[in-house]
Length: 198
Image (cartoon, rainbow, N blue to C red):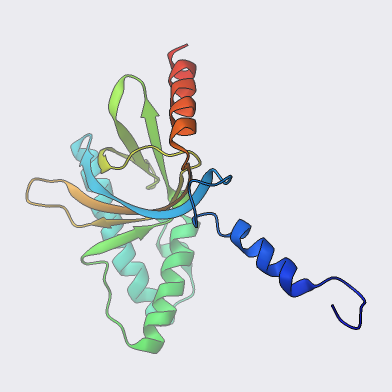
């Protein structure tokens, strides 16, 4: 207290802090946890056209990066890129110009979450990943190592050059809120399974 007036803000802050930290104790009254995980795996092209569209995206990334790094400003020459892709490449090219970095698009490309979609269907055991290339999208089967979580929010996806088997290694950054109370987890999982079986 300050001269007997007003609340003791320091003790209130200390009392509120453990509530804000959702990952501190999973066994107490808080039943959610905010976590960051990285999903790793492979993308398998559905058709040869999907492979060629993604390979073309590598070329467009490299060309746009070089163009913006040299100071260009007209995006009309890169019609195969979405506006989000162009903005992301332009920002990284400007940063690279001041840091004298080299282009990494020869090894991997980074795709914003607005430029890809992950589908799950009951008839398909693996998730289907759609990358929003232009003029047509490219489709992949995703062999991804992760368990589904409540509130999963997919972040930026990094797609590496294809292996000798024709598959693309991929990493996806995520944020998700998962139930940490084991009993509650089972209840929610059972309820979800009943819902999708109807």
